[in-house]
Amino acid sequence: MNKKKIAGEKAVEYIKDGMILGLGTGSTAYYMINKVGELVKKGMKLKAVATSKSTEILAEELKIPLVLIDEVDKIDLAIDGVDEIDREFNAIKGGGGALFREKIVANLAKKVIWIMDDSKLVENIGEFPLPVEILPYGYKHTIKKLENYSLKPIIRMRENKIFITDNGNYIVDLHIGKPINISDIYSKISRIPGVLEIGLFINMCNFIIVGTNNEVKVIENKILN
Ligand code: 5RP
Image 1 (cartoon, rainbow, N blue to C red):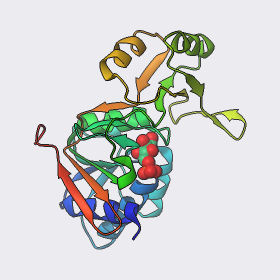
Image 2 (cartoon, rainbow, N blue to C red; image 1 turned 180 degrees about the horizontal axis):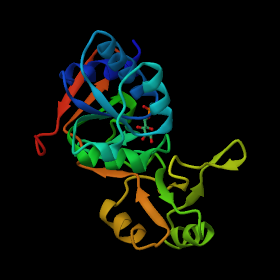
Image 3 (cartoon, helix red, strand yellow; image 1 turned 120 degrees about the vertical axis):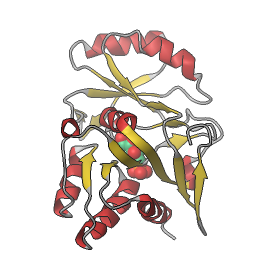
Image 4 (cartoon, rainbow, N blue to C red; image 1 turned 90 degrees about the vertical axis):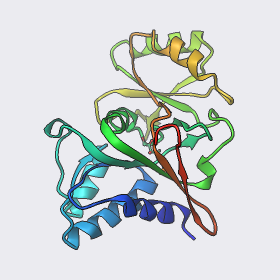
């Protein structure tokens, strides 16, 4: 079984006619977006806000009606992938570099579902390097400050060049090692002026949908629901 596919396609069952959706980014979101395309083709009236340029391109190909985030007052349901999540719904996102827009969309959404294969569900988050979006201006100094906190920052590269986000910024991945101390990290990193957004998503989703070898599990976040 394709674990990402079954998780992505299960999430689509939560979509209702007339909804404004937040469309996530990544290889699991890909399957969900394709299914949303099928719903639109069948006549469902949906609108969607994309969390990245790559998602926007895919949604356009599938003729999913897109709206800009500033054209809507709310998002009914955001469905997105995740890089690591624990049982308290603390998550790391940003492996695909879209963490900033993903956080804005999740924050605006009435309900949030994260879709994943079972490798993403962990005891403690932190093994996956924590992505942080930083301003290009003064980035070497920002990285120095992260190094001074022993957060082991590595600037993200793509094809021998610095990776640039859809917002025109850079990403540093913090190789902290697990388990990470979430409040400690927040208090250190958020004081650094060049830091724009952190890929920590704390208790922001209502459900997770996890694809395993033989089933798809829906786990509810009882604190938010
Ligand atoms: C992009 C993200 C993605 O949601 C995350 O990387 C998803 O991973 P996958 O491709 O395994 O679904 O945070 O910034």
